[in-house]
Structure formats: structure tokens, C-alpha cells
Image 1: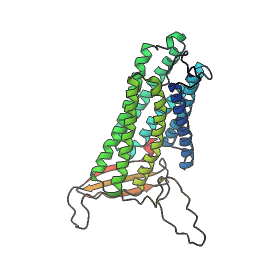
Image 2: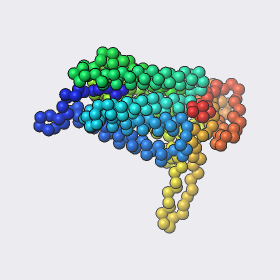
Image 3: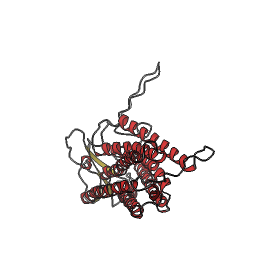
Image 4: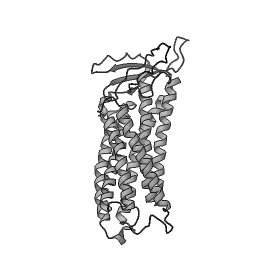
Length: 358
């Protein structure tokens, strides 16, 4: 949340003309976050084939939110264009970044979680937190900003309390979404082997990193380091958005190859990206490698049923616990019949209709 993190009497330069450590931190965090934000925007427009769907728009909005958040914070701290201008720009970026990040997490949750009630509850939780806290904190922020200068240094006690409460609510929201994702990932890991286990382990680690960053922000907030919390928040959120590209790439890789081991040297990291083939050197013949068809996350109806045998297979050549994945993919709206389910096997729906997220 954009907060007035310093008083108007605070100097950003020392008597010898050097910047204070706080000013250096503001400049550093702003520079890093702006770089990450611009890089994210360029990656989005050069990576996605189709500019539509909840995942695309939430990722775009959250990535764009990094820019006004950092710019507004810089303007407000150094008084480059008045108090209201910096706070307003920062506040807009804050709303886009926080709720956009939550929608990014939600938009890919259905890939591993097949429970309509839980997905609906998560969606309404995001909507409720966005409406309540964005409205409340924005009104309170401008109320505090219009107070006399001498009163702004100590802040409004109500603002102080609600600042911690709203940040806790948003962090708990991300804990819940990441927790659901980790829960289903652990279930898959219990029966996964080979390439599937490697991919899901990497997804597990990425979500653990997201939780750790949220915990770190909460600790900084409750210790009263508001300026550091605001600077590290925009940097950490930009890093979490960059991790989303790794998450999506691994999920598409998993779904396209049906849980089978994947040779990363033969397939692109992002299964939904069309990568042009490399030109062969002079005097050498080109060898074509068949890769998976490029697909868009929001335009493909994919259903993967992961089955694991509860009893030892009759055929001794089969590997115990081996995951068998049966898939039917609808690329342009045509629904293919789902694979038959064998009796005696327990099934876990890995991926439901992708379009339900939007």
C-alpha cells in the first residue's frame, strides 16, 4: 500500500551532498522494479500468441502496475511533482499490482485443482478483498495526506492499524491460493516418477519462494520499517511475476507431454510459444524435430486424467506406481472423447476446462 513513508522535513541528501541510505534504497528499488516491469511487458507481448483470457490480462495488468507503483513512489519521496500526484500514481499502481497478482495465481489454479466450490470461493475472496481494502485504504490515504505537515510524520493511528490489517489480509489471500496449489502438487508428487516428478518439484519450489517473500514482507511491515517494506514490496512482486513465466512454462510442458519424461533440449520452455527453427549452417542439411503444437492457455480445452494403480500390475514389465496419463485436447472447440477409465484405479483430475478460469 502506498504510504507517506517520510516527513516533508526529511532530507534525502546529507550536508556533504551525498544521498542518505534511505534515498539510495528508494532509487535502487525503483530502478530494479522498473527494469523488471518493462521486461515483463516485453516478455508478455513477445510470448503470448493470443492476447485474451484471464491469465493474459491479469498478468498484463499486474506487470503494468509495477511501473506506476515505482514511479509514483519515486515522485512522492523526492517531491518531484507535488504530494498528491505521486501518491495518486503510486496508489493506482498498488491496486493493479496487488489484485492483478492474486488473479494471476487464481487463473492457473484450475490446472491442478478440480473443485468448483473451492475455485468459486477463491474468486469471491479476491473480489471481496479488492473492493473492501482498495476502497478503504485509498480514502484513508488521501485523508492522511491532506493533514498538516507536522501531523503526517506520526501518521494517523487508524491508518497505522489498517495498514497492517490490510497487508495481512492480502498475504493470507496469497497463502491460501499458494497453499491449495502446494496441496495438489504434493498429491501428484506422491505417485509421480521421472520427468513428471521433476517438473512438479520445480513448481513446488517456486510456490514456496512466493510464500517466503510474502512472509518476509509481513515481518518488515510489523517491525515498523515502512519505507523498506514499500521498496521491497514492489521488487518482490515484480520477481513473483517473473516466476509466473517459469510456472506456466512448466505446466504447459507437463500437460503437453502427458506426464512423460521431457527432453528439455528438444522442446521450448513455453509450450504455447511458436519458436522459429534455427537456420542450418552452410553445407549441412536441416533436420526437422517434431515438437508439440503451440497452444494458447485460454483457447485450449485440455483434460488430463492421471491414474495410478492401487494394485501391482499383472504385466511384470510395467513399473510399479508409473503414472499413466490419458489426454483429449480440444484446440478449436471440438471436444474429443475422454479416455476410458479402468476399473480399480483411483483417478485424480489434473486439468479441467481451461476456459473456466476466465
